[in-house]
Length: 243
Image (cartoon, rainbow, N blue to C red):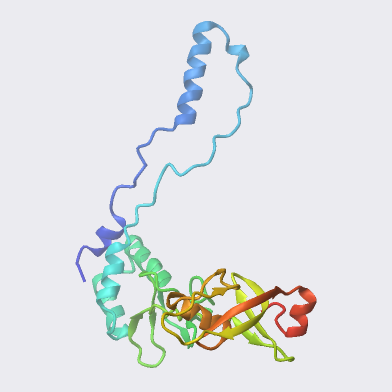
């Protein structure tokens, strides 16, 4: 750890501290004009408070602390914490401020679940699912090592089935969010192939849309010959309501 870690984190000029107080300056300017013109009595007795805005920014620079924690990932947390305590003196209010930020980013007590790492009720912001934002670390409950919150693998949703066989044996196909009761026929095997029109796709059945027709009808080599849209009652009867 760098010897000047405390200086990098908290001992730097505060951004915006030199910004002028514009509401006060405008009020004093109006008062000077009123004195020169003799219109002091026309000034309002009260003025609306100045809008609250961020004219000053905090002086903390937490990037060195983040880099230090990332460089120590995989090591024992006791060793990492001991290194911090060796380089920083908690009796100094400025250096003690670093440890206040440390507990914001490092969760010492966590629970590992299939959906991710959950912070247990202790410290700052307890009881929530920690996210892999580059600023979240935790101590492994079994190995005691400092680790960064891993990125969760986002599995793609399973492909929705766009075809369905009803209780009466009828075939239903969903195209562009609409369910249809369809009649299908098999494409004849001849060369050159016939250009047959698919009424569900509203296009000619070609090899380019063969995969779409398989998703609609559940088997290759089929095309739609007729279609009827389903109303709410028909959807309930076919078991497709809210599907």
